[in-house]
Image (cartoon, rainbow, N blue to C red; front, side, top):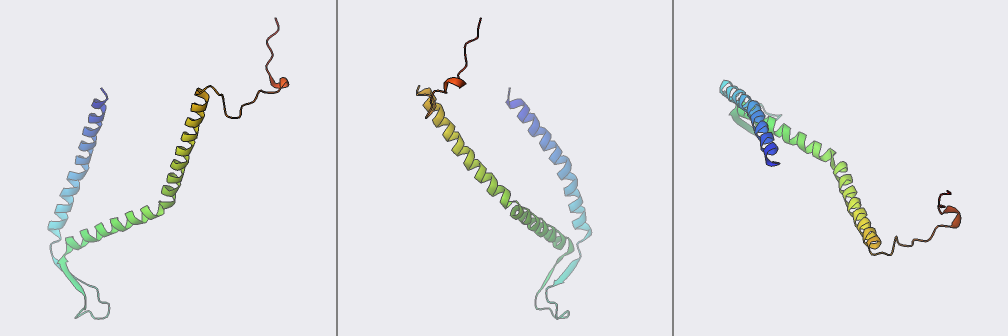
Length: 133
């Protein structure tokens, strides 16, 4: 029974992905066909006529490469900004593991019949009295 909702969710996710990715692919292909002209990108700011470093490629390829580079740089910046949260999560996971081990130790001590470690009888004034009839 538990497999059916998961597979249904996966099917819905695949349909939604297809509804987004197919039109996006059509737009990218149309963009590539419309921008096939060759452009030269000069990386030399001092000589426009004879650049020391230049790159000649179709315009759509240049734009797609620049978009990919922008996504990678943005992802890297987000990953670096979240470093303190990942570090905090690792620290808290370690602390939770230590506390669970401590709780397991207490459970074993109590299950052994010795009571809580260092348990003492409460003073007389703190003991509950039997109800008076």
